[in-house]
Image (cartoon, rainbow, N blue to C red; front, side):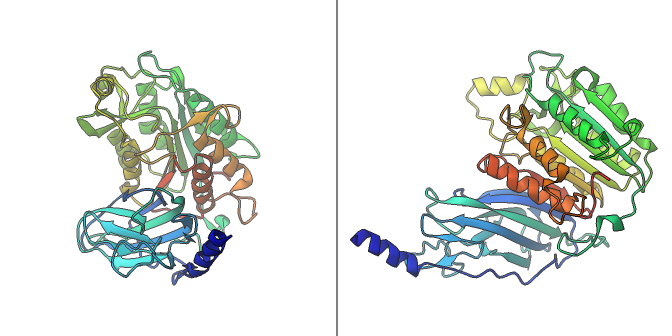
Length: 428
């Protein structure tokens, strides 16, 4: 009883700070927008957002996490006895904090607006030195306005009342690629990548789904998803789209760097990729960039990718593993996100970040990747938060982030990058 009273007394002394959200919309014109997940139990976590001195930064955090049994709070943190602050008197314990590179930590809280004074990646964490008993995670949107950017277009934020029907849309085109089994049997097979792509195709052409004309959808599964066919789809077939059209590109399969020693050379693996020659038979990420820059005229492009299923594929990675060189990061997700830098109107949604692997299981809809399982549930109406009969990107993205993180217990976190209109809908 004494212990219980002491516990109740301590609980009464812990005070969750109120939310402080002065901005109901993004207060800066931005060149980069990335959604990240910051866990309460992790050390400094790399958002992979690259910051340069002079960049303007706006960070918007939402959610609830706990710094131990008694310290539940939002991003602003809590105060109480033995608060466990790790950086001077501010911020409060369990608050969201950040730093750029190895620089001095600063308070983020619910919202942060400031200008960078140094170069480096943005790192974030909970303000708590002992994270072993912590739980929960925050969803954090990071917006960056580059110091040298020229005349960016201000895009409408999800918080602004704007109807999806206000957007002028031409025709809709899609390229859907799914590869579970590879011609070279030394490349590990995936269980449900082909099934995921087929299910997305079924939704996109359905009368009660995306309502795309089947003649405007290119489906490439397994043996049809060769290097040549993928290149033809992106470089030739999609050239028929004009500026007013919307293009959706979906890929489910392996993605990998060339080797552990060349992590910057990134490839999607077509059906005819070779285990011992990824560099010459993989589909280079820079070819997708070339297609978006030089061959695709549409100004609204949505790239959806589930490509990070391992720490790297191919002979060089297996040799590294046998030599006990742990391969824990696959930068394919960051490579995909970089496609959004090509220009306004490109949205890139990736199934996981570079420190995570995409999960698939029979438990999700009888056999799906968890990302595509919730992608389809969201598109079929669960993400239609305002019940207007349309699922916009502004609705779909937070739905995907929450559901996948919840289902996988924060071991897989979808990411989004790009400067796009959140009122855009993939379907009609």
